[in-house]
Length: 302
Image 1 (cartoon, rainbow, N blue to C red):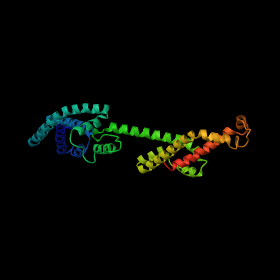
Image 2 (tube, rainbow, N blue to C red):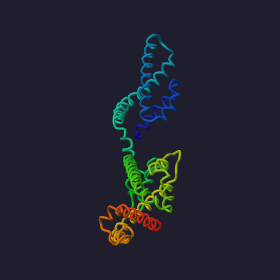
Image 3 (tube, rainbow, N blue to C red):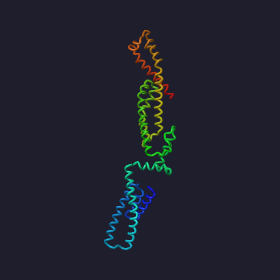
Image 4 (cartoon, rainbow, N blue to C red):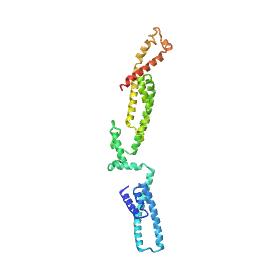
C-alpha cells in the first residue's frame, strides 16, 4: 500500500474511532489485509449513507437543538470529505483487487521486484529466507545457484520440481541396481550380509520423504550415507563386471583344458564338452563365481 493509501486508511480509522458505532472496527481495520479493508470500507460507507439519509428525514420532521445540529453538521461534513476521497480510492482498489484475483502470483512478483530495487529484506522475512537458501546453493562446489539472483516463488517451485526429479531418478536407479547385485552377492556370505542389510533399509524415496517431513525430520546425513552406499555397490559391481568380461578368454581356455574338457578326457571333443559334460552351463557358473569374487575384492577398495 502506498503512502497516500496509508494516509487515507489512517483518516478513515480515526473516523471509525470517533464514531461510537464504528469504534470497535478500528483494530480490525488496521490489522486487516487490503481485500478485508476494502470490504470494511464498503460496509461502513453503506452504513454512513443509510445514517445520513435517516438524519435528513429526522431533520425534516422537526427542528433539533442548535448545538446538536451544529455538531452533527460538522461531523457529517468531515465524513463527506472522507467519503469523497475514499470513493475514488475504493474504485481504483476494487479494480486492483479484481486483477489480483485473476493473478494470485502478482503479489509475490511485485514483492520480489520491490525487494530487488529497494532496501534489503527484513531479517526473518520470507524474502530473506529465500536469499539465504540461494546463498547456500551458490556456496556448493560446483555452485548450484547465484546468490544475487533475488529468487522468487517461481524459483522455489522449480527447485522443488528438480528435487522431485532427482529423487525419482535415484530411486529408480537404486531399484535397477538391486536386480544385478542380488545375483552377484548371493554366493559369497561376506557380500551377502552387508548387501541384505542395505536392501532392508528404506528406499531413497522413503528417505527423502522422511527428511522433508516436519514430523520425522530425519537428518540429511542419513540420505548422504544411503547414497554413498549405493555408489559403492554400483561402482564395485561395474568394475567387477568389466574385469570379468576381460577374463573370459583365459578362463574359457582353462575351463576347456580342465576336468570338464580335455583334462578329464584327452579325447574330449567340443561336442562332448557341450552335450555330455554340460560345459557351457558349468562355465557360466564358474564365471558368476569369479564375478562375485572380483566384486568382493573391488567393494573393499571403493
